Image (tube, rainbow, N blue to C red; front, side):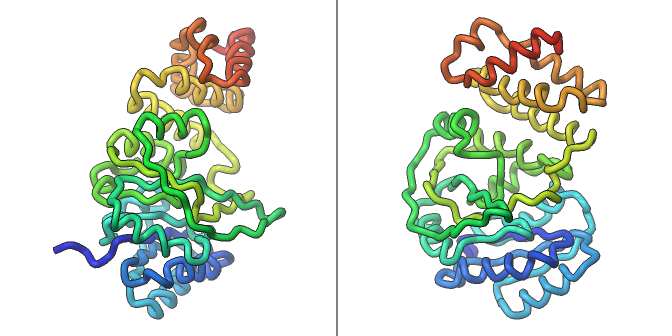
Length: 308
């Protein structure tokens, strides 16, 4: 029997009590006109503050909400667990310290039900606490994209990033293609795989998601383990995306070498990055008009420094 829910909003939280009230209130306001078609799945991962109690209180007041308490301490495993609990045809993910715009799901949910895309994607609204803007929701324009156009948006134009927060993905795709057990960069690892598995892709010119850029976020400070996970995610992207994107993929390796060369403390990671740089075809890369000049300069600088 088909689920009554078009969409599952999957909220994952770890020690978010300072932000969680605003997050949960934003979910309520985002889906107030389509709440019969939306379920809310709340996953608390090993929180030691008031997060669990806040989630329980919200669920008690909202019938289409369920709370799960886990102790993975690993966002990749938390996301996999959460997807398994979802009953909606589509899943969108929300971190416990971010927000959705008011009424943002009012048009998105009927569109998903009517058009049945594999993915509905949008660029996130990045919010810096020191310069918070007056973000408001407006009716989106939906544009169908080919897989090639979507990959180019991801690799070239940066209109899409490797995030699952704020995106709308068919649940069966997420069940078939699981997140790796990473504590960060799990989305960068899986996003290209979901792209290549999707046929019907739609892009919205506005996003419902407020992505708060905080100094204490998981990816704000990279240690050796996080850099290893970034290398692993980039390698998987290299393996999954077709060879026609080789030069554009090379830009990701160049960026790692340029930003983190001194921090590549693991020999295997350093060897992986060096091998990827050595495979870049010099004439073809430098003559490729899709590759930004800034990446060509970085590549030549690395080559002159004999970084590979």
